[in-house]
Image 1 (cartoon, rainbow, N blue to C red):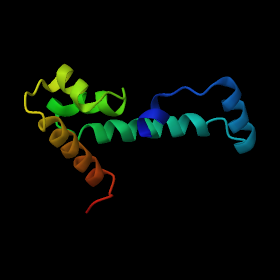
Image 2 (image 1 turned 90 degrees about the vertical axis):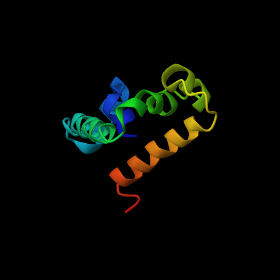
Image 3 (image 1 turned 90 degrees about the horizontal axis):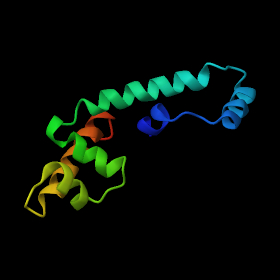
Length: 99
């Protein structure tokens, strides 16, 4: 969600609707900036060698095997699942879901 909010640009209609309800024109952009910063902070915790693989799966809706072919190039069929699980565990700790 941090990526979606931080990297999306609201349409003119939705921004007018939200502005008319909140009466604060800066609230939308502040939310987007904060979400983008949170996404970038979380992204730094994922090991660099797994980052593209993880983003292909989560942001581009690729399957684990498709993302593996492009980024990891692992021949072990279970490796992509293990790497994806490792990334999810890292983010769970970062966002405070696991202590």
